[in-house]
Length: 135
Image (cartoon, rainbow, N blue to C red):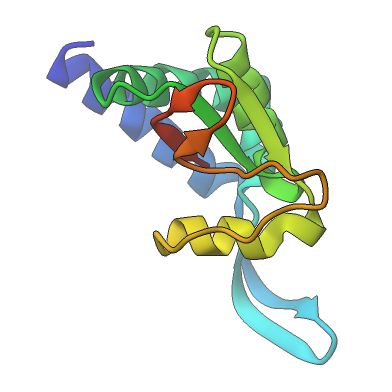
């Protein structure tokens, strides 16, 4: 994607986020926690136009970085990981009990072993070294 067209898509996504994902005014975000501005990106990642724009921006970046697999926490990454799986990347979701591993990977520390003996990250017994994008 050319720089000008990439920037145009990015601006469209920003407009969509501002229109659908940002709420002003008191919002309850947790027990006893109130915020004046709430950004709920799922209102865009679960919107057909939003997902198409994200795909148009994310796929070239991941291909340019030679990413071989994609994944993320099941709570928020399912639409994005599913969309990227359509592009033929191996994909995975990390359930809540695996959140520690995701946090460790985000901080580039060694992830803990899972119950089934597998690991998520740069090393996979089946595939060797993988370049993984965590969403």
